[in-house]
Amino acid sequence: MSPAVVLGALLLAAIFVYQVRTTLRVWKSRAFDRPQKLAQSRLIWLLPLIGAVIVGAVLEDEERRDQGNPPGVGS
Image 1 (cartoon, rainbow, N blue to C red):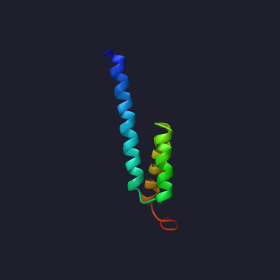
Image 2: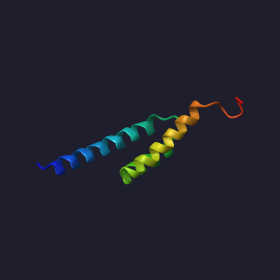
Image 3: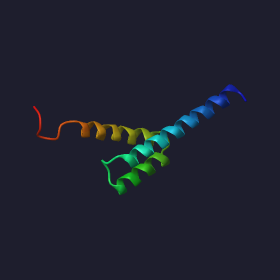
Image 4: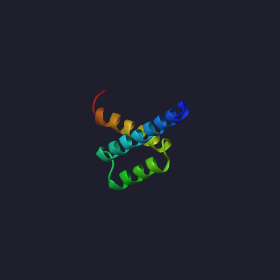
């Protein structure tokens, strides 16, 4: 096997793992209800890599928002 084939296979495997990881994060999240989770899962798998990056960014934002102070509390 040529190095290009090995590199391509590793790249595809890494993208697949990232998509699986992002899908699992969506389903473990408490920030979304079932229809939203279904829609986000479809986005992840219908737009490989791009969908996972978009949904991952939304999840990061939601997790960051959940960790902060509730609205009206603080400063």
